[in-house]
Image (cartoon, rainbow, N blue to C red):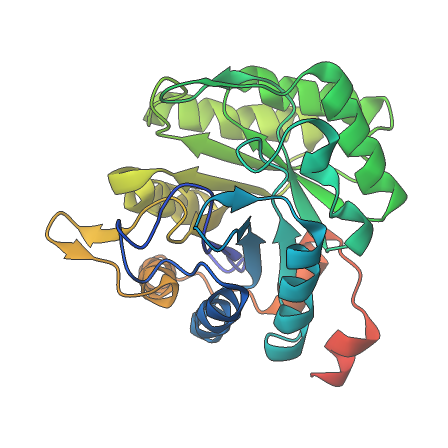
Length: 284
């Protein structure tokens, strides 16, 4: 198999703290340093949240702006993807940073259960976030916690609310949402190809101990892989992950076993149909 595998590193998230793993990057400086190490290890997308000084999640556009500036300086060419997830804010505050024009942003197009609450994505907010992404030339990554989310993304694409072929990420292993199930995983792939075309790119993310399982399945099936301390703070039952880069290197090893090259940032941008700005070309 020769098609390059895009590795996305989800560096921080909204939940893990340094009490869970001291390597979780909280401050902007820590996030930039951790991402740079992961970029050098093979990640071409960074999925980014920001935090307050007390480690609680934030949706402050100024924090996102500082993070974006640092990432562009220290990880030139890397695809910057901001989270619009619901733990960081409510309503349109979740998309307040989209005017910064990151390359991508996560877009959850439906609601589902999380471990202790409902992850609410009401239709009017989904429509607004999608419109903001179009207005600022931000490519959405569809976070599919359920089959209906893939079907909803197709409906939005047909209606013109999503400009390009959607990039769908299967999220499996969240308690009370979709478990890690191989038959479901395979059906997700068939559904993406049926709705969006045989060449439509897709990604998969596993939560906790299931991260390595989804990495393996995705790489072997020709998809792209997400890793990082947001989803999983351990290498195994007995060892904390020492860094985001360590988790990235684990995916690189899986790619090697399956004879798939790791996508460079240029290849990743080409696969996803993203703009290549002057700053990326100068970094070549």
